[in-house]
Image 1 (spheres, rainbow, N blue to C red):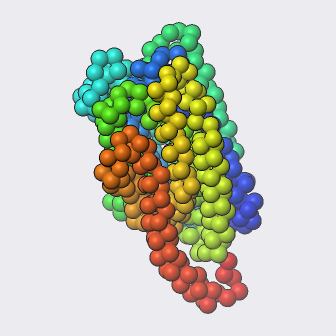
Image 2: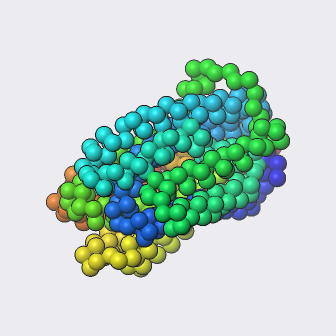
Image 3: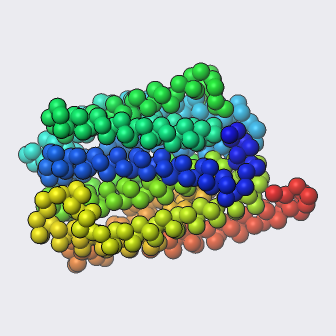
Length: 457
């Protein structure tokens, strides 16, 4: 479907099903692969390897964070430019963003490869645990120039109306990568580095497939001669900073958590934390897939001044996010033993008790997490990057660190309670920021209706 018609004319509920549902399926496919990644490593390579990848994972995500900054940061002005019918600006943002992602992939990948042993040692890991974590991180670092653009090109495809194509590409990547990883680990007997290599090969394959129609010039966005400017770079950074800060702040929090967990509960506590993160790694992509898939439509209508349509689209987004989040809370609370055994089949009584307690407390997170998540996505789509960044950093770093200090006397239970407490504080903050934004939003809507009483959308 033509993206301009989709974003501006299709009924909001139908638009939600056309754009958000495939987006959620895309992210779910990716999440299921990440789930299988943990299952394969935990069951085939053992508990030490499973703990090692959880130690390395924050640095792996940091490796992708700059690409995500540029990809998301360029997607918002691309959508707004298209809404304003400025295709030249949109194509320049697209071209420059692709070049910037490849360049940062080279630099960050090289830095992480060299620093991997030091970073892992600083986490408190030693011996086999440290060796496995370094191997895993270094494979991702080596492949960084070719893999980090995968999430950006997914955004570009959706902007061009290739929503189903994006969905099928993500499903293919997950299935192909899972098959590669199982073959590398179970058939060829590769170590933990083989799991990382399988993921990277799957990403590179899908990057090549995704860019093929762009290179042929068959989509709405085209490559052009890049015209870099400080204003353009500042705009990309401003729009991408909420996601970037969320990634960086979240990984800093994860590093602090792992540092404390090793000392409070050893490798078992790190493994339990990994189980929580894998559960979150299924739910959060669903929320992200729905909200992020609607951002191009919201940004397009923001650029076009269709304020009533933005309201209608966001009502669908908030409602769906609440349903998914509350259902997830129920599943985690009711099935903690099954979730634990999925990753650690031979968990002893001590680890099972720790994991069950952690998961039940963690389930409370999703009673309120949906609201701040949907608000952050909304603020980013309408170029209110400061509000989105404030929600992002508070959720990923400020509130968790504050609650770590407050809950410290409770030991491990205090760490598990941290997630629900953070989500509640983030929801309160989001409500305050959303109320402030709507005062300005309503003034803009009334002014438009008074100026164009017969054409206001």
